[in-house]
Amino acid sequence: MSNKSYLAAANKFISIDHEIFEYPYPLSTCDIAYYGCFCALASYDRNELNEKVITNGNVRKFLEPEGKLVDLIQAFRNNSFATVFQLLEEMRPLLLLNIFIEPQQKQLYQLIRHRAFVQYISTFGVISIPTMAIVFSIDTNELIDELVNLIDCGIIDARIDPISKTLYRLDENATLKNSTRLAKIQKDLEQQAHILVLRAAVLINGVNPAKEFEAEMEASGAGGMRHRMGTFDDSDMMDYFVYDEPNH
Image (cartoon, rainbow, N blue to C red; front, side, top):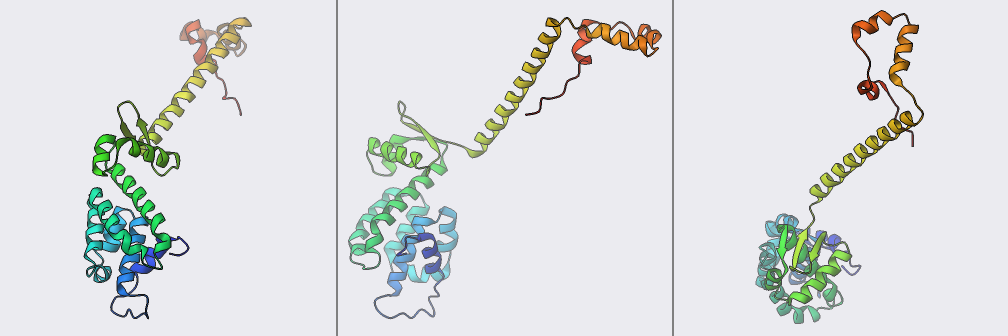
């Protein structure tokens, strides 16, 4: 935790066995509960929080004597973020008195706030920012500034319409499908442009594929077959003309 490796710290804290925990002062079961809870909130997603903390019987033995920690984790899982931030503010004075967590308190709170934004946005595709501001008990313009910063940092994959004050979450699957579709359109256009260039070159140079084909048939002794097959006209020119894709 002192190295700000909160994910690794969370995994360590939740793996401590409550039944055999014996540690000299100043580290107590209460400390393990607080350290594990805050590191988990700062690093776990919603599913991990539920599987590794909420439904973990061993972890709950550490948490249950600290009722506010249980309320905090439950509120976070249920997207009750106004309650989450209210509880965080109530716990701040206690954390500032703890010699181990006090140096980490500000960054932990910031990471928890960021993860709360990510979790809320991942639930919806289109979000009214004024409504989101109410959920997080924050001014709408301040929320927009925070969201813009998170988008710029790559923490949130979304875009904001400043006029309607709406946030649109970008769907990774939809983005991939659009990229694939645009790549196919580009390839088709390149092929059509290549055919047009070839056709123009044929016309400019006075090449007549129909006559060349007839000459080849005569030279091969298949002149009679030409009459049975019918006349090779200009409409068949591009079907006869075969070209290779240019090498890049």
